Image (cartoon, rainbow, N blue to C red; front, side):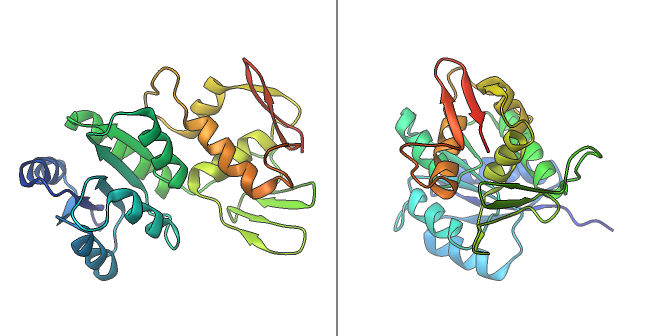
Length: 233
């Protein structure tokens, strides 16, 4: 029998915590509730967590600090929810490694749809098409799609988040082709993207810091101004 997914909701406001948690439970999920950073850290140690819904404004450590610490050792999906609606907050959260970001007040139906999409992608193993090589080499790098790994020329394994891996894999298979942002967004997630979404630019920036000799003068992932990006590997 397949066990239901377990979601950790981290929220210091009792009303919001109960509203989100109860909604998930009605939909068949198992839910753990945490009101601050200490409770979140304890739950992560004691339980198998399939997704974290993380508020940014928390007593003790704030959400961004917790996300940064979590990403140092885990790739568990994280949806950030916050009353901070400035673009910079969205960008910073995505740069650190959030899988999604929702502004408060939350539309619970939208949260559920995004949760289902992310969990489905997280649990579905990558299966290369017949015409896709499982291992692709470029500029000394080795991208193994079956193992979902990236290895440098000296044999060092480089950690990629789920979004980084999917984006790099998609672009590498289309080397030399100019790819529009809409195309790249479509390859990443089955959710509704907002106009002028900066997620792709954030992921591109993170990839460049990992694979480019000089991220400020990229030679592998090149910007095509006004259009998108082209992979030159």
